[in-house]
Image (cartoon, rainbow, N blue to C red; front, side, top):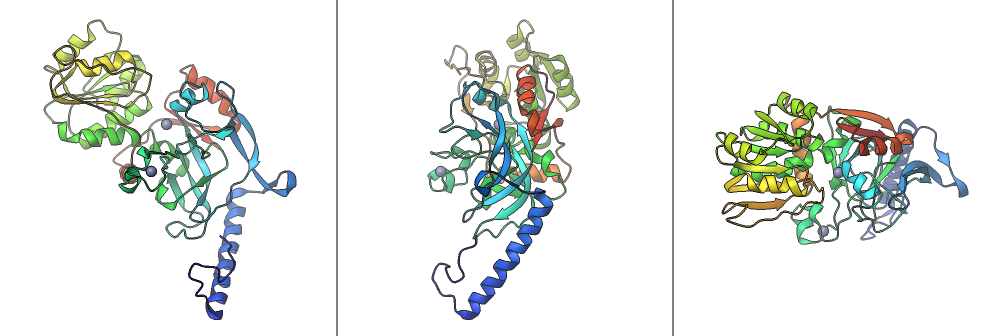
Length: 393
Ligand SMILES: [Zn+2]
Ligand SMILES: [Zn+2]
């Protein structure tokens, strides 16, 4: 950010331009330190006088997260540092911590891919956001150059740099380094800490449902399997976007109740005997689309077996199941299958817009300080959490 005056590309800075630049840089750094004072509180100096922050890092699979002091990130060119207000504790972090999903190229690493907060500082070349702006952070970072990135599908990048799930640290920390301003979605009336789960828990079902829209019809039901955090957003989004009746399959009685209160037309017990036959009867021969927010062997089998001809099955949850399809045996002709991943930056903007103008209600959540992150892990693992826990570093 503080490159020497006249050192800009092209080297065209004359004396007048140089002094203007100097003036602007002074203003910027004054503003930055004022914002830093208000947002950061007293800064801490670790060994060697480097500013440090609190962060929860994973040092090895199967080990508890360690809350410790690490160097506070400084913005490089085009980067933005966000003061994290909230970081949603996602179920997939359980799988990463336990080593069931081994995607981390290095450790220790700061996890946390559902983040929102305030811009703390911005590197050279950043123009769309300013210090203090409330932002939600899109976490599906990519290389920026592959076919998927250049068509706006950064989350599907051939060499993903996902926030808190790659070489790049995530948001279980006071500050988060964001590689590009395009990954920030500005917030209006929504408090950043409450907005954090939108970046995954709402965005992921949103993408799957948007993809399914051409197959959804108001006179034929769709199936939602699993009415947890993502599934509940799924039910709400289906009601907003499609008009198709929503049939839910869920093991927990309280979540079935929640599904009905969110507008599902029926909620069946996942443990009910003859569930596939019941579903086929209830849906007059099968659903036009099935959204599997669990992704186990059994739920995938149910989704594939109860989707009608020309229908589509979307796997969103990653509980380790295999989708087995044998036409004329368990799957009807022209049934499509897709495992969707996260969402795009544009889709996150759409989700934020739906919430900010009151069309989409936020899911249930609770706040927890960073120091309690290991307890949050344990509670989530024991199934004791309703809705989303948002870590507030
Ligand atoms: Zn997640
Ligand atoms: Zn890419």
